[in-house]
Image 1: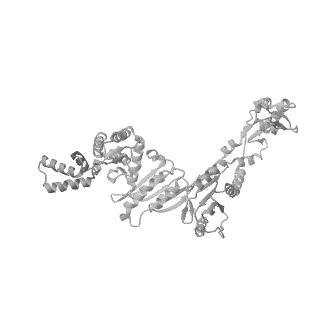
Image 2: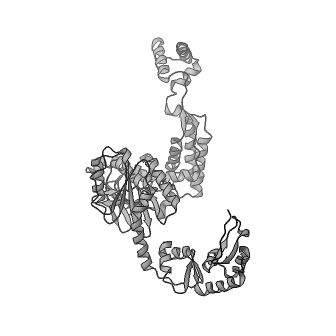
Image 3: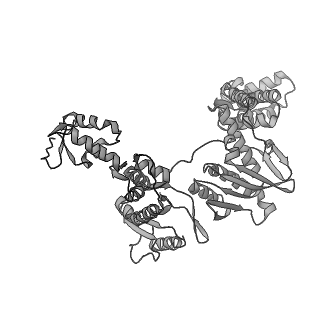
Length: 518
């Protein structure tokens, strides 16, 4: 955020917007010059550095812009003051000596006062003079400057302009696509009042103005400004606000599609509230199930309040939410379940850590059949979660299978290719494929029946009593089978493995004694 006197805006009709840097060559040049002043000013006093910034204001024009950039760089600088003597003590001693001797009317009188005071403090006159005002802001010395690129600085400047404009906001409405947990934490931390509702596929949050608008607008606007960075991490987003300026309410709109490139481009970090949740997410993802799992997805409506589940499992059009409860009492868990019952139509898994309980988990049963309680000790059982998900997975696969109408134009088609084409799961495609008359499923591939008959004829001619596997694979190579071994076994042949080497294996008619050498 910047001081209000550095805010520059653009007006048109009833709309207002900050005068953003467009990241053009002139802006980049100005940012580069400001960064260079601080990078080359290590060891100089703040006052000297600011004089150089004033020179840049004259070069690039628009002092608010250059001074705003300098303000942001300076905040990340480290300034120190190491006087030989405490400045307060130095001034007190000097003024005391001047009072005793009388006001100095000549350089000689001044020198005598300095020497006497320096003698009392056991420092040199030079050290005493340097210490007198060392605690002033302008006298502090630059110890280190931040390493930042011109583009990063310009984007931070644009963000700060937006926040400064929001100082004067009376209300703000926004949509986002992630980072909801941190957004609502910020809203609650800064004491903002909100209303949230789902409109179509988007979740919209309105941060309402205070009861006494004209008394609390500035403080409320500051809270809005501090919440803004968290909203920007939930890309794509859209923000609308009412800005009170010159006794007029003006409209301000910001959206990621149009303005996102002007602002810092940061991704929301996937943070976990506990090691238990982090371990569970890693293990679940490693299983490679058809379910995708997302940490802290969008909020869900629970009656008149909002819930942000710890995890969302997604399979096609089916969503299952999961809440992890650590430390709890029976009253707390009862209230949590009561709130979950307000969530309409969405299944909920509640994983409760028994080791962190203050009460025993007795007589707490969810009347809502969509709520599944899983008890655990220190580690969330993956198997129990999969069992809870299974009925919903089966229902989703059945629904997908019923809707799938497969029309294959190619003799060989991979199941994965069909699943991606139809936006369905592999299992649904596999079940739908069972109804096909012209193709047959071999391994993970659908192969035309006429083609597999020709493969069988080729194998009949190629395989004798016991034929080397490489020779048989070479014989069916013209058919471009993605998994020739699966096709060979499907046609009634078996493979005898002698060790793990492909070259040592042989093929024979089904029913021949199979040997396998480790």
